[in-house]
Length: 323
Image 1 (tube, rainbow, N blue to C red):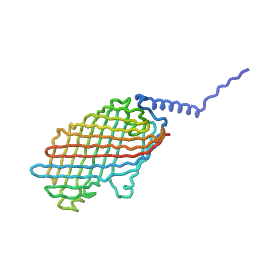
Image 2: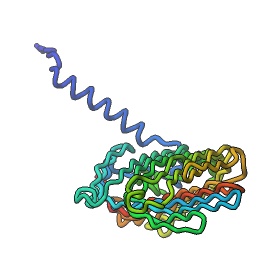
Image 3: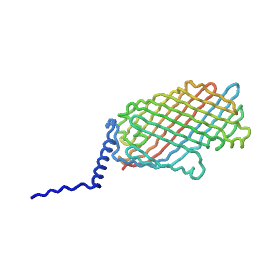
């Protein structure tokens, strides 16, 4: 006689089965890719941990000339240096950054950066609020030196990319290492860029130099364009990336006000914003890697009345490993 007994599956067992099924589905989706796997593949580990050293800077040049009145400003922020730890799981990254100069009270500026890299679309966004601007202001032949705290700035930079050859060319392989570029490939790019913000002198400058002019700079530029990027793979260890996306300004709002006298550029005029990226990644093994990246946004706005140029950059060095 054979006795067959059916026992109910425990709640814990059902939970484990459901969890395993969900994990299996997520894993399949993670490794399924629109890439040509001869050129780009996912790393074997799901987790990527990195230590990063970041540095950013910004310079602004503005001048206006009308009715024999010449005004000029050359300003730059202090370089911001941070140390961060980042963890990536299935392409999603979270990081914590530490600014030693800010903790010591020597640096009061604030900056927020958001970067998104996928197979087709990529995005670089930054917002900077700075009071560490220094440089020189010139007004009708008189020059005034500016120290940290004499001016304040709020600036937004935004660049969006579309990658045409997304099956063989990978931005993530160069910038967040969520993919690995196996063979060299390039791609044409399309994109849109925006730069905007304000810069104005403070009461500190007036108190220190009563004759110094009150200056306010307002900028706003929207550009569209196209460019090219290339990933060069050397010996299965090195990845070198370089890309440039020039955009033509289709609308701008540039205004320079000195002592209440406003000079405004034409809203429609031929100008450009250049967006550049560079990266180098060295893979010690499939698990360990190190490298550096550079992202720059350079604007060229030249008008008969007002000229405004901004140069924003961010450099990063990193070391990481996969689990």
